[in-house]
Image (cartoon, rainbow, N blue to C red; front, side):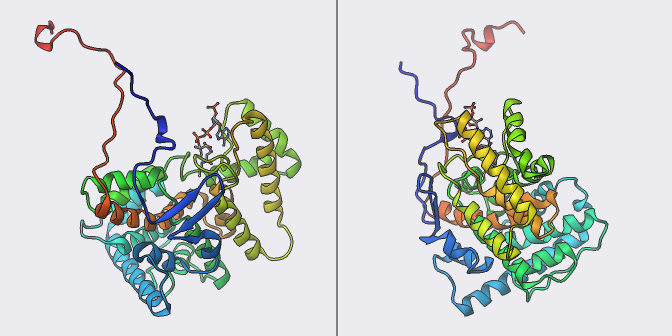
Length: 368
Ligand code: COA
């Protein structure tokens, strides 16, 4: 009998149709419902991409105000649910809190509830860790601005809110990545929305998927100055370690989101190149050179997480919260995929090739 082909990591395997986003790995393009990410990020607030994903169209001004109000109400509900359960916040890992907080949502919860809870729980985790009071949401504020305000405990400038918006828009949705697939598998069983979102968040917590930005900053700290980048990268590769923020399962060119985030960061920082950005560019260039030498057949370039690290650092968001902030945006994608899977999808149930020992003795004949 011919052995079936095994698609380790499901690379290149097409398992569904989607109308949500198109990821062109060879061309380095990402569009959400047909709109290029370069046009969306920096132009529309997070509410708009959430509504684009949910409804298929960018909202007009009245629609945007409704979306903003819906997320404001959801943040208020999340705060009311979380405040009496402060013991939940005492976990060392923000992603663990996010999983737990999202699990408290009722089975009937909708996408706004998931987004509201993700934002409130992320901010609450930081406040609790710093021994500060939780801040109640201000439902009238745009989502990004209120998220930053709740976690910082200080007023947020329009420029800062715009930068966070650009980030949340850029990472809200990205095809069938590992966490979205986990959410869709869960949705395919008929499970409720919070369960699918929790599955997605769990998958996002690993360093190969959503967890790279913190380690990217650790790497920049370790390198210290641009001239040391090549030697650092060579030593890391020689030790068999991965360079965080480099490489991608789908993109064979620089991740388009790296361009978008770098652009947003440059606009935020104004004239000149701040030393941190100069250092990052030197590390990226050295990593690109060394990875090309080591893997000439595989283009390993900067991915979204490389510039995510710099952007979230510029907003003074603490490193241990980076992946949770990513999740705050990606929950919009999870929710849209949940709806799509429930409407059009089929139970996802692949097969595995059994390679364990074959039993030759019936269990009843075995001496115990
Ligand atoms: N640093 C060093 N080596 C890397 C690398 C990196 N960032 N990315 C890939 N490689 C190596 C792999 O180990 C593999 O080597 P091998 O054949 O000797 O095992 C080779 O390059 C080909 O890898 P590839 O098949 O392209 O990677 P993948 O599709 O399995 O993995 C990632 C993709 C994203 C998991 C991988 O590039 C990675 O670990 N990057 C760092 C973590 C990161 O930034 N994650 C965020 C992704 S958005």
